[in-house]
Image (cartoon, rainbow, N blue to C red):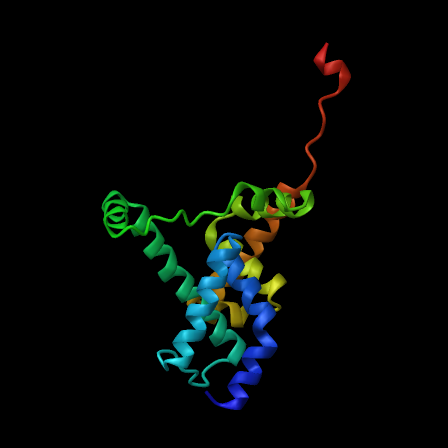
Length: 178
């Protein structure tokens, strides 16, 4: 691997892990696996940056695609046939995070994650790319492999829906209860 690419990957590592974490629904172990598999793709030259987009945009696309591959693989393992094959091979580990891991999240972060989870997938993806990964809408369109118009629509609708979901629910007045 060229030194320039290695330097770019090192500079983007924290952001790349954040994106992998989003693509894996907040599961740290899966995000680590996805990011490692994406790095392997580069090392084995199964993924190459062709210069049509910025390196960061291209790298996030590789991570997203790798996460989708991992998700499909996980769904297969969870299927009846997959479970049977795992039992026969003696490799039946539960890929879900432990309950203790889930309880570590602070209250506000959990609320934001809940609200993001209520958004349609495309809206959540574009909001994550723009706000957490500091990509432009054009770059997000490249990562998501959709048109800029589609990204703009998902972005605006996602922001509006998230704003609504994060509003505190008005408490029922004392008089309404009696």
